[in-house]
Image (cartoon, rainbow, N blue to C red; front, side, top):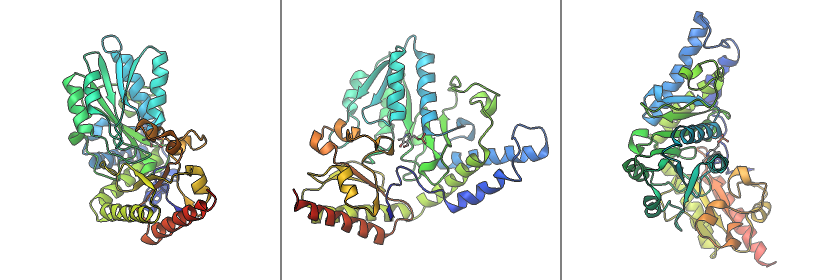
Length: 378
Ligand SMILES: Cc1ncc(COP(=O)(O)O)c(C=O)c1O
């Protein structure tokens, strides 16, 4: 089995498992309790927050732990549209957002929010010219993901923030697919809000964070016992938060190593084999800045699902994991204006830190073999 679906989720790193272990057992205390054993747990939470803040170059008190990307995106969108609705009813998002943003905006439309979707170009990048046209003094927020989950393109978020701030709007980026793959620093991006998802960078599932720029305040999505300085109610998921901190430390080390460059080379070699051996293979997003681990391609005549079924050793995706049950094809490719016949052909291969040249070679060979054998039947 060759696992090439790291954008769906990563394994939890052994170092992360080790860091979490004690917090299930002898360090089980509620961090809000008034005795020294609980204080030590509280300190562990703050250490994790510090480790995450180092990765993101953010002040620790700007990070609020949540249950993951879906919660962070829901919280931010629901809170901002509620608070600024009166004089700024408009929310702008890109056409390639994850459902945790896109579906939340759909729901907010029913509540009266004015949602404007900005298209992407044929490379999979947000159309800044259109963004400029629709940004006005009635815009509360611009939300554009940093790295696309399906094809890995990196959006020009710093430029988006410049344009949005000039119009007095706030900026959010869902950085779920970028963190741990490329440097993600809130100051450079100049965003007001940023979504963090632990299980995309070797942390546990069900844990994430929302960065909230200093000076901004959001109405809590989950009211409760005043945890997270009153910003998110509910007893903290201590083992997962400790794991998120450990994952952040590992990500800092990975980003400072040769790893990302090596990974990009492997991905490029993989695509070179496909293009050489399967002349009508199409690779998406390669003309844009991309995260180093993602390759999205299609072979004419094949649906993504049929191609992966013909390569039973490969574990990859036909788009994002969340929509793999339906056969409607890739929303990202559709937004890029790719022909409908090709939209259902997307296969996404995403590499991890531990992916070897041998695994990539075997995967490419399996795909080439499937393509060649398939031709006989077409
Ligand atoms: C871009 C993006 N945002 C948000 C999420 C949602 O994360 P979670 O399912 O952990 O809440 C994902 C996960 O697939 C994602 O890729």
